[in-house]
Image (cartoon, rainbow, N blue to C red; front, side, top):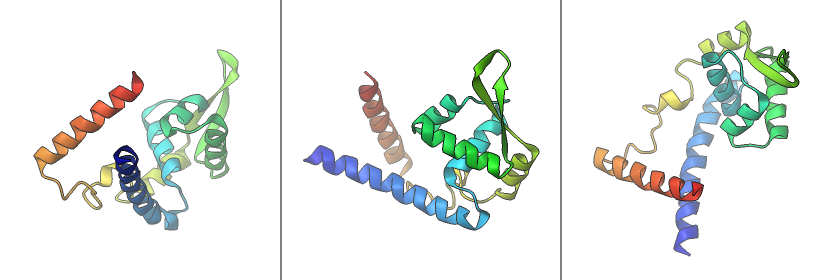
Length: 142
């Protein structure tokens, strides 16, 4: 029972944190996942839909819906890969880059100072927690 209880708490921490970040994005008419995809596309020339699905830990149909909504807003383009006509490449547009500019200082992974769920931990406790979670993740991948 302790395993379930502990996993439940870890999930609640993550969900509480992401809900807080998402609430800050509501007035900007963008979701946390959309913002994340735009940030990744800003770093890469393009991504394939399967890569976006992997980054978001979701299935391909869910990623396709996210991509379509990004397209609808004019923030990304989706074009056939010239090397493989079965693949599509998703790229950020100038409008997408502008949208990211308007979100500076708003929710995102770089905004931990404003809402840091780990702020109550000492540096040593953070390192211990990081080490333990890394150990669990490695165990799950084996």
